[in-house]
Image 1: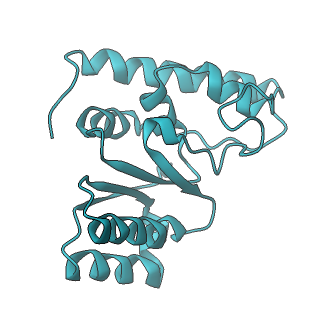
Image 2: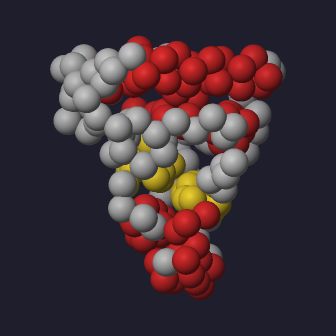
Length: 174
């Protein structure tokens, strides 16, 4: 794994400002779908983006905006998806909670708590069986660690020596 860009701080600030822009559109009632922001989680999304290699894959939760923006380097496709336009990242079919992007190796997102852990584990296993290289990054929230799927996935990944990184994001509480 290697760092691809030098100005990580600029990327983090851009990511925060992009989410603030999306939030302003949301507050103005522009979207007909829920949008889950990830303010305060920009650094980890930028770090993952800068760490991922071409053969790596990313599995996300319903709170995926920061990873999609970090990988895309553009807010346009996400906003158009939230506006349910055909020009959106998912051509208006995915909304916000299941937004993925195969071109940027975001393989899967899920609005079901803990679901991406099992899917990511299976994907990592499939890569091993096929002889493919690459690390499977699986992002989950702290709420999912109460689910059996979390521990089963960790055990499965470890037992099969699958190249993977599990990231647990904590929901901010005020």
